[in-house]
Amino acid sequence: MKPYIRYWNNGFRLYPPRTLRGEAATAFLRFSAEYFRALARRYREQAHLEVDGNRLVADLSQAPRTLQAARRLSR
Image 1 (cartoon, rainbow, N blue to C red):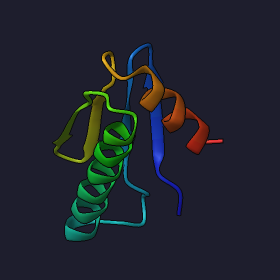
Image 2 (image 1 turned 90 degrees about the vertical axis):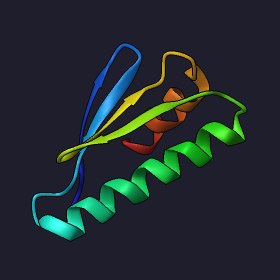
Image 3 (image 1 turned 180 degrees about the vertical axis):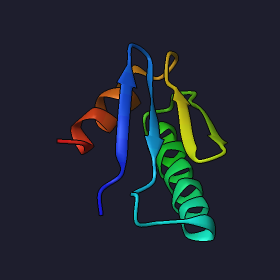
């Protein structure tokens, strides 16, 4: 049960694990958004996070240290 993350230059899209559906998938995405917001606050950076349907879209162009931390999590 691992989420799917697709990175690009200044952000990423996070999709819930395929085994989660409906409310569980939405709750997972909301929790993930809060986690990355807290991570950005820790680094005192501004992160733009949006739950868009079945994915979390993160624009971290103003938060380079948060993006680095997110990439370290996926290893």
